[in-house]
Image 1: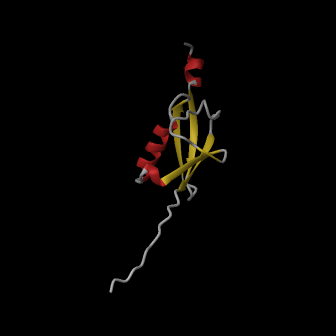
Image 2: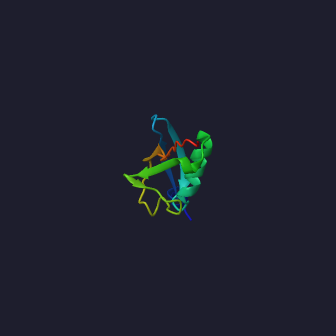
Image 3: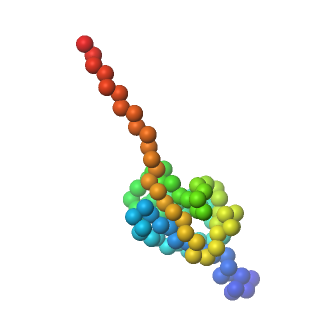
Length: 94
C-alpha cells in the first residue's frame, strides 16, 4: 500500500452543534458513524440518544460509514438536541 492510498483511507469531518461550536474528527472511510457520534457525545458530556446527527439534511444511522454516505474531506455534520415529547398529567384524587 502506498503512502497516498493509506492517506486516502482517512477523512476529516467537522461536527457543528446548534451553538455553532465545532469539533473536528479524522476517521477512516470505513468507520461506523456510531463511533463518531458516541465520541462527540462524550466530549459534550451528554448521552448520544439526546442528539440527532444530520448530513446533507438526512439523519445519520450508526451503522453507516463516510464511504456509504459519500462524504468528502472537510464535510460538515450538523448536530441538534433531540426534541422529546413530554406529556404531563394532572389529576386530583378526592
